[in-house]
Image 1 (cartoon, rainbow, N blue to C red):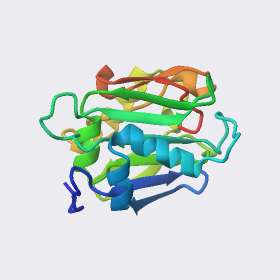
Image 2: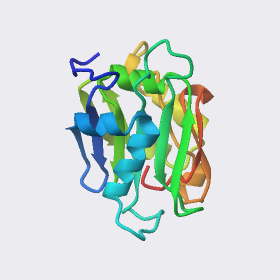
Image 3: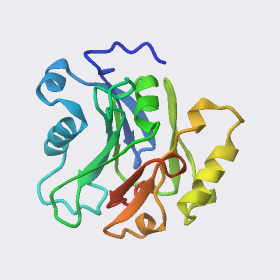
Image 4: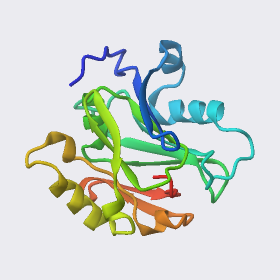
Length: 202
């Protein structure tokens, strides 16, 4: 676990991933924002409202995808360790929210982050690798167009056996690759399952 200071269930750190620039940068979340908007959904709604320009195309690089873990993630609180995924929906042009259980949320929190913001569009397939303070984009050309089960098998075998950082994954499948309005985003070995607009950017 990183040394990030917890504030009532939060690490106060979030990763901003800019696919256009190929950059991954940690940012600090202000206490005031965390007090006012409790949990992943409330915080995500505020962040999307602040960062998205009115009238953008949900399937364009101007949209953003947020992965957020609430303040109870990583604790023994029942149903508290769910990861939420948020964006502007191409079906409704409104606020999209889906969530899933499994290990993704607590492991993200243990790594020292409350969430991830994904923005922009990559010129080539990439995946986000997180291992505590180490976070970077890596080439994913090998699994472009593959089914989610094949992608997860590749990710698991791509790293050394016993690597904690590689045990918990989320990937989107072929529907997201061709910008379908609705698709699945399975978590680690089908433990989690988000449904929604998984853009070609991810």
